[in-house]
Length: 153
Image (tube, rainbow, N blue to C red; front, top):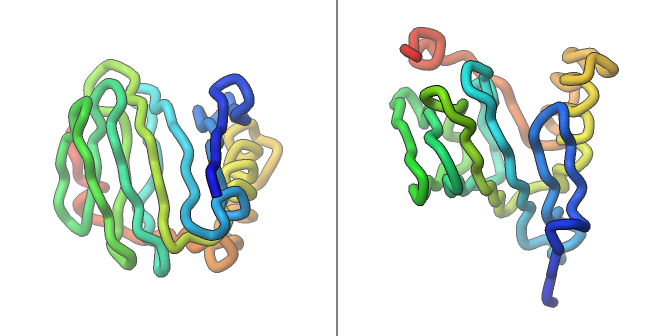
């Protein structure tokens, strides 16, 4: 199965900066992928883990501060990171420029519904408690991280 998503056909969620590329239903269950743009000074994703999915990050532009486990790294343009299942991680733009990142999740559950739910929360149309209630449905489990809470900008 070949999957081609043209840039002008991809669904863009403007409040969250997410462009939906291909979900599990599009790839015959192989992967889900999206591109995100993170604004400087705004947290991209709080600490969370995926029990089933591995998550690949590829930085297209800018710099991304990324937590993996209890370790913080700054990823630069062209850097690749793979986060295995059950590994706490978080990320945000590093520095004063936007960060643009391609994400691919394997062994994932369909996730586009999750990103649409997040979009509603960012716009103020959806309560964040509703997002939290979907952790098993979308394999996105929020966790505490002292390393993330004490990070330096």
